[in-house]
Every structure is written in structure tokens, then in C-alpha cells.
Image 1 (tube, one colour):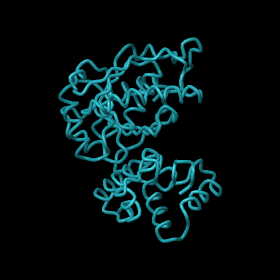
Image 2: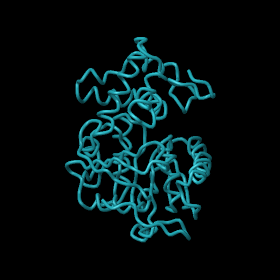
Image 3: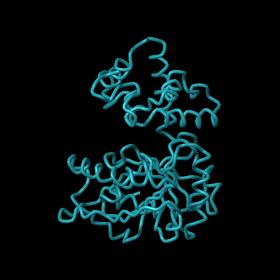
Length: 302
């Protein structure tokens, strides 16, 4: 897949955006990832339809997109403009005119299969359906759609407007046309694709979730503090962040959901969420988005 094209310094748009044209990108799910994806697309000049069943969530998402655009531009991660149009809807009716759809609902099989079935029924045949999944096999998800050849996995990292690389998962039934459309979309978004094969957790989370789970177990056993565990990774291995700080960024609720997907599909007890993770999720300590996780985000380490 081709990415990383030359940028026009006058407009901030990539020189190959003409290949995408004026097609609207639809994003289904206005949670943390869906909102951040809307920021990326709007900031790259693409028109976006953001849908969610909650009108209140969509209103919060609009404010979050404005804030994230400012943040990304201060860091030099998005061009100055012009921005793409952002419209919101509580139904999937507008998907019929979308050039491509990204599904970004909660990482549970039930939520994703329900959303993908509704998306598939609403779009025109041949419309790209990209599931932003972090663990559920793409071919399993594609089985709930009318045209599995239109479905591909796109595992954007959080936040996608700051992180260029995207883990792209081509399922066994994903067609060449879907991959070509995704190539054009990622080029317009100025993202870099890393294409991998299908399977539970793909590459990233097949490895990362076990590391996070084991790191949490070490903290629970009293072997080391969360900070010490992370310092081993940053100080000894040169990682930019440690596994537990990464878990807080992803969201501990998402970590537990992803571990369940992996455990259910592999039977490997290394993916059975440890008690400390489950306890934090029960207490509502999800990480960055709630202010507390393995660390406190009021300015003081937990």
C-alpha cells in the first residue's frame, strides 16, 4: 500500500488527495476512537459523517474534535486547514452516500457484529467497510455482513491523529477493490499502512495484551510498582512508554474487553484478565479517560 506522499505546503493537503476526491467518510461510533478518527479526517480536509445512537455523545464528540484539532496542530501533526465538514447523525441512513465507512464501536463481538450488519445493509455494494478492531478476527466480523469482500480490518492506534502507522488486516475474503479503496483513504489521511494476516489480536495485541496482563500481575503480586515496571521498559529497552502507561492510554476497560476476545478464541490462560485489571475496571478506573488507572492523571503518580 502506498502512503507518505508529498504535502502541498499551501493547503496542507497531500498531493494525491485528488485520488480520493470529495467522497464522504462515515465513522460509526463516537467514542474515544471514533471521535479521534473524525479529528484526523476533518483535519486532513475530508468531509465526515459521524454517527452514534447517543445524541449527547455526538455533542460531546463535536467539542472533542475541536479540542483535538487544536492539540494536533500545536504539535505540528495536522495541517492548518481547511478542515473538512463534520456532520453528525443518530442513524445510519446517511451511509448510503458514503465513499467508505469505518466502524469504531466498542471492542466486543456483540457490538461490532450488530454495527457491521447495520452498516452492510445501509451502504451501496462495493463500499469499503473498515472495522477498527483490535482483536476480533476480520473474517469472523465479515461473516455478519452481506458482502465479506468489502470488509477489511484497520487497527488505528490511539490517538490516530498523532500516530501515523495503522495495522491493516486483510481477511481471507477481503477483495482487491476494498484494499485499493483503503489505500486511497489512508493516503488521503496521510497514514502509513502495515498489512498483516488475520487472526485473534493480529500482531499488535496478540503480543501487547499478554505483556500488559503480565505486567499487571507483577504489580498485584507486589513484585514492583507500576512505575518501576514501566521504567524497566523505558529505561532498559528504550520504549517510549511502558506497558501500564500504555494500558491507561488505551483504557483498562478496553484492555479487559480485548483480553476476553483473545482468551475466548485462543483458550490461552495467558489472556485471562488478571484480578487487578478486573478490579480497576469494576471501580471505574479506566486510565486517562477517567483520571485514574495504574497512574493518577491529576498530576500525581498513583
